Image (cartoon, rainbow, N blue to C red):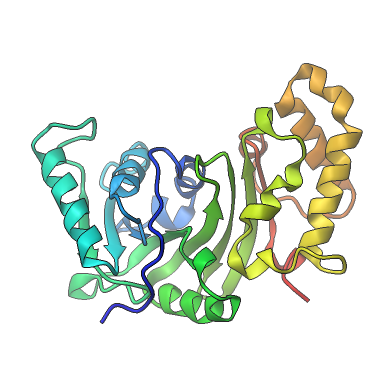
Length: 269
């Protein structure tokens, strides 16, 4: 039997574009001899799997996406959508390398295959925090050597998101991604933190310190906003870097509204 629970299954077209953009940069995908990506818990519609394959194919034309759900009804619905794609009646490429199967955290890929990347978005948010570590362990065990689990959550239209990157060595990084032109303050992401962090956004915890420092930097650099939200964000992230936070990733990622730090700096204490 699939391991997991049936969740609400909420999904929307283009909802996961921010995390997909991040996954496209992951070395595990770009360097893999078998660029297989799992969309775990895709929800009531298989659209996120098609979008994921379409986006990643720009960087790896041979990328393959397998969507897993523990609801047989959802697998049937997604398979019907796949038939429509194959018939050329959608905007997705008829030859898109996408498939759907019944499965949960155990990700039962056939023929002993393992994924380069597993994306599990808006899944563990609906579980108890005590279940997160075991779920991470199960999923990471199904990765290729050097593979990455990207686990997180976002709002309904994908403009506020955060995620953790997890490898066989444990959680590695934490990332925030925001639609900068629409935020009053960056800590809006507090409502969409991964399950491993969302209940720890309280004084004395590292994630609270990060979001508080980010809000202060955002406010301090309000004047830079005359040059646009992106410039204000870049100045804010640079202030965090100067203040002792280890900011990872290229400046080009930051321009997209991303902020990535080592997991060790935000891990609950």
